Image 1 (cartoon, rainbow, N blue to C red):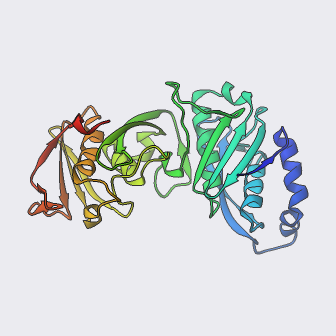
Image 2 (image 1 turned 90 degrees about the horizontal axis):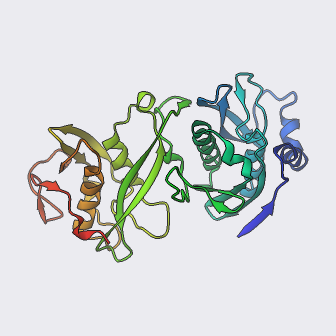
Image 3 (image 1 turned 30 degrees about the vertical axis):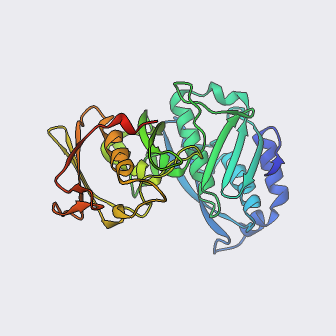
Length: 315
């Protein structure tokens, strides 16, 4: 793992960024056309109630150098007076490391003093900004090297950008609350299920994403740790989802029929069913492929089958 200590305070990190990347400053002087890779950086508004995205152009091509530039921008007060730096209020970056597709950022104890809403927004801003770097897919935040935890004391672990739900097509995200989903992924053998709690930033008023759709999207995106395994092909598309009389009706495209590794049909089916039935408004689930209500799911279950919770597969 390539680990590089950064300056303790964001002000010094900014100075480091300027020293390492003078081309950033020169490119902004007298140049009409922006140079470099466009990266969306998320900032908090002055009231710390939402995120606003601004595009910056990163001149570095090396991933580790791009990470430094993005962290520098997150510590920098933007020109827009309606916004504030993402990492401010004395929050210092102690170290960061980059290993393949994952960045780990260790922040100081001041991070724990953030209000709940501000903490979720800050976390979302850091993750989204860093994962906009082409080679970065995962981000973990630690506090003085210890795992960041949710409100229940559970380690949050590795995060991806899609764990923070926003309204598609807009650059502004408002987060007033978080939700905790209980999702079921496969065990290593593919013949059983493992329950995982996943905390997400979610504002239904802004995102217009119903909880049942959110659950399925998270299952398709897959687990974010090495202890559980995907049950659904990541190429799967959710065509339609509705809930009537406490039954959730799902329509997938044919990619759902593709088995993932050694995962059994029952594990795939009940990872979906058990995860959805965790929601208070769903008791049963029916699954169809491309709207076809005839035939069988992987030659085992009739398309008309209505599934109920099955905990016998849970390890």
